[in-house]
Image (cartoon, rainbow, N blue to C red; front, side, top):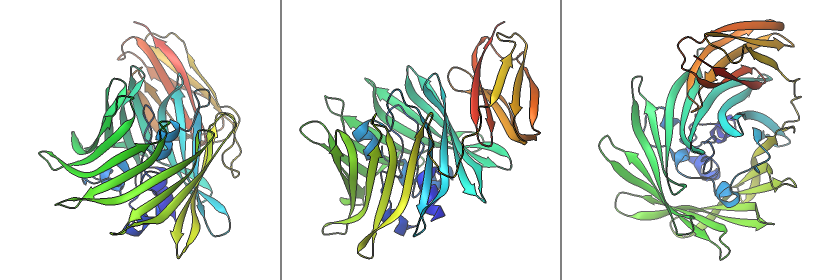
Length: 397
């Protein structure tokens, strides 16, 4: 079950072919237009281990295309908690934590629930241009440090996403891996996509997707075909139902060579503002529907997991501000724990920081040498085991 949950949660676990049959292909895929990729799935390890195939990279979520996201403009998604069904109750397995800068998602950190503690595993840093996501750098936590593993770049035409390119880090350069190329109609609706694999010299088609809409313009079906070397054949499809304009449930079917058969289904619930608050996925196993995964969505000011109590606000200050050649980062912890900090420029590029270290409870101060930084505005992110907070500083020369 842990393999399944991590596949849903964050971009590193390879699931078996059997799992691929019970997991929604689009649920374990990623993001939405202008928002980060944060959920990957059944062959996602391929992307970060330089193998060309990554099923999880392939598409946008049906649900996110149908609803244009899981939050309103006023409600920022703070965290997602992924839970597994143990036969009696839901148990926490993993979660994603989100950090924002001026209302734009700047970072996602994925953690696993291990021995009653949340442990950092992966993170993604996002860069924007003209209000649109243009790059995502994915990292793994290894030996106490964050290490680059993959990069996703986004291209647009007339404000519509046209390409998503994934590359892997070789240790010295970024190498092409896979890409998705999208087509839209005159109304800006996505109608077709093709998933391609880099063979070292050119892009080879591997899978393609067709989008079908109702007369009212609502996405109703997403269908996949795979290339078998000589022809395209059906792979899977998803159909959605709506209530009050929001996706309420989704049925996933796979092609058995002759007809479509049910494989999985999802149920969605929303708050009064239309923000998604739960997703429950079930698989069709031994002629019955079985609970598999539940995702809880927490927005700023709410609680997602019954097992977790929100800590007090983290005291964090940066001074002097504006600063010229040096600054001090001041913070106070209620109890001993680990901390790390990073600084980002206005494009989202990390320009400074320190590795994780353990500090005692109480007040602390850390120096930051600014002499090599150009003048500008920077965002400093301070992260503890359970909290992330930011401050802005202006550097002048």
